[in-house]
Image 1: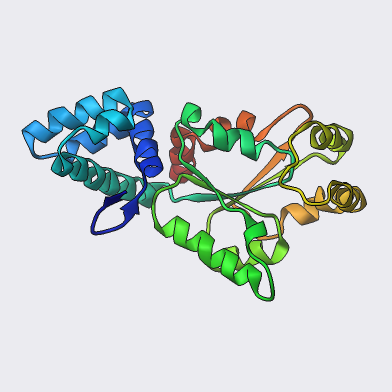
Image 2: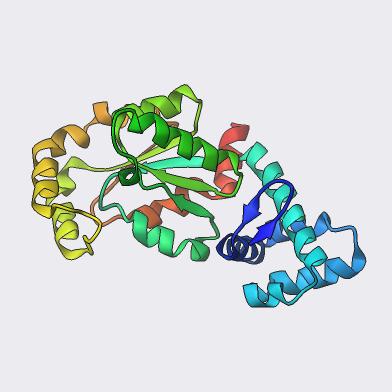
Length: 245
């Protein structure tokens, strides 16, 4: 654990910081530009180049704190231009794959699991959890569920939402995906498939796409996954260009 005046960071958090600073060269330069101590600058440059937490851990605690403080400042500036985006993606779109391979895409992603929130008012508690993670400034994207109440509550908080839904004609393809993937996280697979079968046309409709007032409406065509559209829709260059327009 690494403690700062703003937050507590796990080894995993710091590893993600190193990966982002290494894989996104322009962002890594922003981090280094915020280091005033010459000796610390060289050490932090080496740490970013190594992209390795064990190397990071070998440096003096003051150097480590300077790196994290510079990262916090750089990410705060980036979030002011490009705020954290909440992605509400349909089951089977490839959220797990993208989460597990986020470093390859140069993004920092948090997967918020709604199944951990139960009982009356679970939606409000879930949204509080999501908002807390947005405010942490740690993530480019946060994955959330597609529950209508959750999305409407997020919209009330002016959260930037991207909604990802497959085309209605993709039903057979998606049911094959469900059958072929790891479903250990689903308690009753038969019930899961029956609910999807019953609601498929409604949940993949234009009307449902508009629920939650998403800023980005993304339709997945046959054979496409979330990873296929993430760079096309959310590269920093594309997002900055859109804001200018």
